[in-house]
Image (cartoon, rainbow, N blue to C red; front, side, top):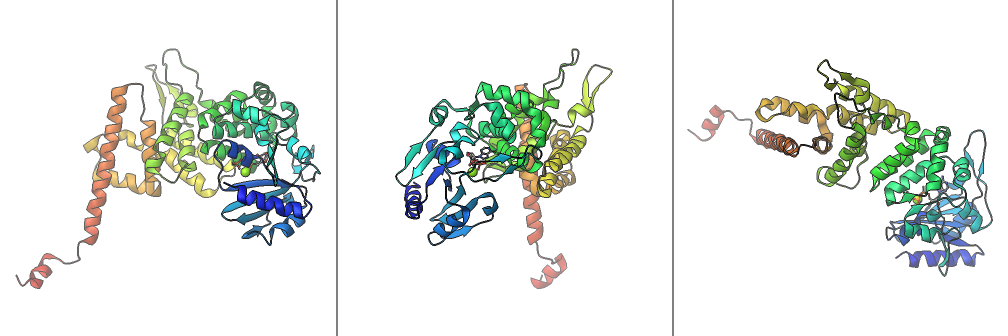
Length: 420
Ligand code: ATP
Ligand code: MG
């Protein structure tokens, strides 16, 4: 599909005496049949030269990433990012990657995170370049570092989190050696900036197989660094009051919320809903109490959970709107608990709608996902109760619409008008 554009661009670079190759996520995604509208290229040309080559050809260009060696160009609906060969150096103190340009495609590929991301297609002519067996790993559906995992993660600890992110996006496994390195080196993730962590964590949560990515985070100890509230849900099972494992429950709720995403939110994967599902019970470990009768209680855990949610998302530098929306959903997710048909007055239903505001669809999805129990009959009853709540919301809406279109005339005025 992309060949007309990639060949044309490759020809232009060759005419200017430079190399060009399609690389990284684009090659991987093309092989997996999931290529979007983004094309990543790498070249020996320096950014200023790249700009000179693409300017007359592209529909539009941008150079916000030029300090990092990246030039952007749009052509026929394709977003092309052209990055100069890298030979990254790491400042041992700040761990911030410094930009240093490299001279060869092979050197550029070796510094990449995983073999499936380290394949290239040299242009023009589409010569496949795969020095680390990325194609085989892609067929085996496994994430493996081109060199020793320890060295790779030592160079950039963010790659450990990226492993979990790609596991979620692609449904791939992670090479046992890399998992071992992640376990040993998880703490090293602390030196990575919150912004970079947030980007990967969001992509993980938005992936098609978040359970896979999250399980890897928890098993490797990475979650203790970036999202300690998640492993904390693995509450010790108490002998006399065996309660469900909140961690397992959380992953199930997340999957159920994803199944309801299309119906209640629409427009593809929804970060706010998914984060709310992931965090909805994080107030439980802190509020757990063993009552005299041996039962476990979690009084007002949704309020504590909303607070913890805010703090965590702030720490991860999420934007204000996301923080507010997710914590609001966590706070409201138990409101339905007290609902049993007629018990709720119309004003209680209205309050539910008003408090949820634009989050109502997501609240429906979250609450329904959370209304699960091993007891099939109880679960069916909960879903039916929610059906009835949604119906009442609908009825009140129609009622309000009728109220809104009713003219401001009283009976006397109407009689006068009709001459009655
Ligand atoms: P997508 O953009 O769909 O999320 P991607 O594979 O393009 O996936 P990016 O984060 O955009 O991922 O990175 C582009 C490419 O750059 C990767 O495929 C990888 O080859 C390389 N890369 C990105 N970040 C790193 C890193 N921290 N260490 C090594 N290589 C990296
Ligand atoms: Mg990309």
